[in-house]
Image 1 (cartoon, one colour):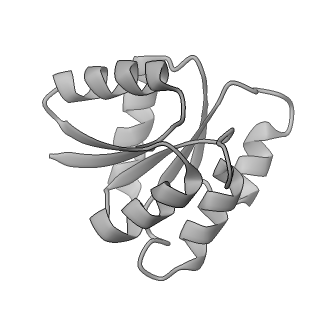
Image 2 (spheres, rainbow, N blue to C red):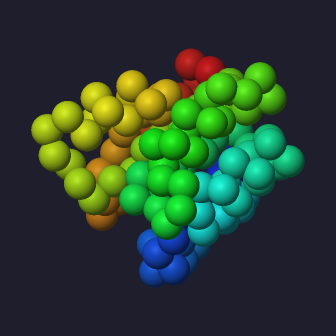
Length: 123
């Protein structure tokens, strides 16, 4: 079972993606609604991969990723940034903050599954 931590503040996004991932019977999905809780859960739960919304209340996804990548206990957990803002430079900014991959919202489920599988193989 692949453990995914999904850090997202939009309940509709959480419901949809959590349900679809869990229906594959490959994933267990943990959820945090902001960057602060996400960092705490990542350290406590040690998920296999983190799906990180970049636009979060309080500590945003960029800062949460920087914090995760700066700590020995969480630095090796792959982070996939998810953003509705597919502006030029968004991907580069996310990767510079420490994200391992970048994907856009609305999430294209099959593409995201491929990204998760690819990132876990290369981990």
